[in-house]
Length: 318
Image 1 (cartoon, helix red, strand yellow):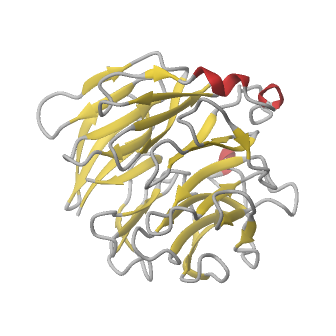
Image 2: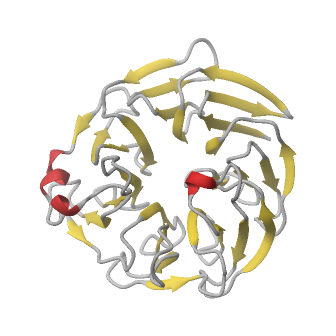
Image 3: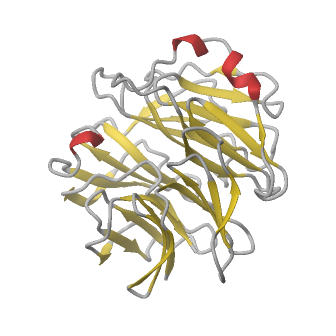
């Protein structure tokens, strides 16, 4: 089992219990390309690449204050979300990037206010349609979910009930299905949501779960109804001391969940819960307190395989 780990200390490779540092810049998101190369978005606004040997390369820098999210389309095109709220696109596997300037001018952009702590709003999540690379989903951490069907030329607000977007997952097995997790916890509308019509309508999922600050979510690549969700009773700011996070599994697209890991002491970040797209029986997640957990049965159960690690912000199968 090999995993790329993005932490506040940098990028690392976890293999058979051993951790190999790859880069020392704090990493917020990681994707694996088809050839095994890891691309990492950093808290310094750059994108790093590690191809399995030698030094980590800097593919891009100054994409914003931070690169907060990355999405890989089936045709190899990449989308990066940044802080302040903006997106960049690459057509050559990350070697070059161009800004999608239309997002800042889309309806409602003047209402994006960040998290209320004086931090500017960010693109907290991006998603690429698995069959149509022109369709892009963007989540704003205090602005909701927007969709473009024309590679970012125009945008449509999908009217998500809770605007505090944490993650977006599109089903590879059923591309019209979109999962979104939200935080906030200040209204009954917060929690996780699912759309079966590309964001036209939404239904709340996991309503019976008593922890409603949702962040991490992983959709199974071949079973469209299987989804793993994490939820905490508190905001990330206190996750080092008071997380009380649970992990849930649904096999009916979120209509019912059962708890598979209960009362973790650390929370699960928005990109730290994943299913292996090449071996879907494998899943993994990392916590804010440096624990790494692994499943080989599609999320039915998890075992702790690592601890004492830094705050795990992103996890990807290598």
